[in-house]
Length: 248
Ligand code: PGA
Image (cartoon, rainbow, N blue to C red; front, side, top):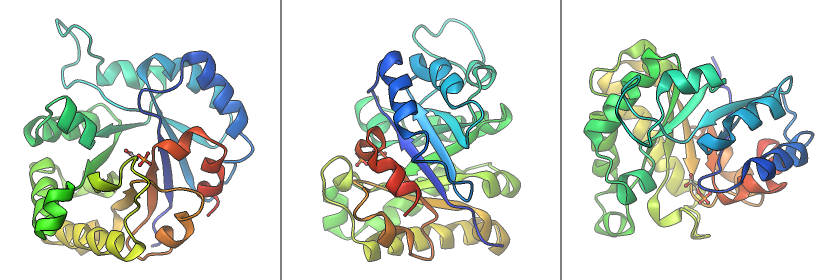
């Protein structure tokens, strides 16, 4: 069974609610493609606005973060049930900015993967190596270790619903994209890791995205690779270019 392509925008800390509404209107016709899963992962404050703005279209809404408890004394945090009730379907976890700037480790990320599934949200689990690790040549082991830890105790049926985003840190927001062959090499290795941890059917079902300076110019080549099932897009998700990526 062919895997369905999934193109997700990661808006990061951009777009006030009014700007979010405007962006949804700008992109509406450009992203109308029923053959592709299109997701906008947006700041928490924009979720309600974006859910309303994309109602009746092919676009799904995602969150950029959440905390693993359902409720309680966790000042500043937002829970999975809150996201679910607001109309969110996907949620990003393990992004390098959360790992590096906010100190999130694989133990927390693993708990987030399990919590998201328990709450009926689909995780977009990010992994990827720094430039130092890439240069040291140990990036395959690095990414394999992230995936293994992050999926500890996650079932095969859940992994079949999972989206994994391979995002080499040296390519995020830098304009320096991994070549299609570099991206394919790691995405293939991720699929092989899933086959080792689970089985061939699970590896065949899991969707793997590439992320890191994907844009209207390079998307088609990246997406033509066997093990790249979609993209997680930062900068280019805030512009009409996102429509070209959806249709690449
Ligand atoms: P970028 O970001 O497309 O701006 O490189 C991708 C990401 O961090 O998800």
